[in-house]
Length: 444
Ligand code: GDP
Image: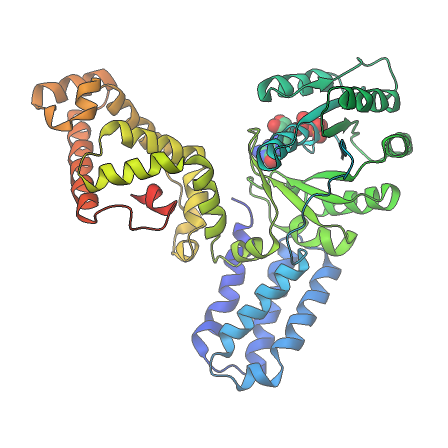
């Protein structure tokens, strides 16, 4: 999980402040020293850390905060505001062209996730903005890069333009653009070559492509796991190519946070998306304020609800609420909702988006055993359709058959059925559908 160490250390820094109410200048100084160390430890650029801490300190030592009765809370609020500002403040939208097609160029070092992200971005914009994308394979050097893009295109059902690896990338980009116009595609995403390190030849080639196709956006894809290196790469690419924005990949790993917190300040360019997994839908718009919340361990309910809404079909959700209210919720519904929830990402990540849950002692080490969920599913799948619809049919001999079929113990089968029935009664008692949309379905 990203930012874990940083969140823990910041929470330590604020725990005594929060309790205090009125705070002294010395309290603020002490907390700021801890914040400084926490940020340095998270691999945030040292200049960025210095400026950040100075700015927070200046605001926090102001008279208003020191005189106030909830000074501790106010200091935390100042840190939140400054963190959010550091990452760009407002969410940065993608730029599109008035005259289609809109052209995007993907750049970055080898392995950063460029090719995968080209596919993710095409998929995301098709879904969210109804665009008709075409991918262009202009990385002719990395063996298999073209095949990889073609495979991604097939998976997403998005056309991929390629001319093999014997034609110059500039030529491929130009021809691809013509082809996109001919096919009435309104979005073109060009996958360019990467190298292990930045070199002259690569930069020259990228500049030539840029001149040839005049892109609306040049996205630089960087790997968040590489910390300060990611920031240095972004700085060099920006110097040479004047990139428009950054996409930070692999935020699903246990990255410390340095890249996310430094890139905007060092390059002046916003992070527009983050990659949160290997699957082609694991791309999220970057919201500085939500990220600041997450870093401070205050959760990220908005993202959680959005993910839930993506998975859940409104009409179906209402049907389910109705079934719950009438005590008709069955094992088929149970499996459907369990699958939906698992599609939203690893459970421990989801739990941490709920405000307060990240602060529960031991939460850092918490790892949900996803196998348990597989076992539950195996048990339900071993029931007959009639049993799934009406769990009351499950007498002892049927339960024994289910246990054998799923290779779980009879005890486990009994427990699952008992818990299922208990929760079903409880849900009916709550007369369903009263919870906020999205959350109701998840925890219902
Ligand atoms: P390229 O050389 O820059 O084109 O990189 P690729 O697109 O081939 O990606 C390199 C590896 O990183 C692949 O195994 C991808 O599946 C993986 N990858 C890309 N983005 C993410 C991400 O956001 N999270 C995770 N966990 N893996 C990613």
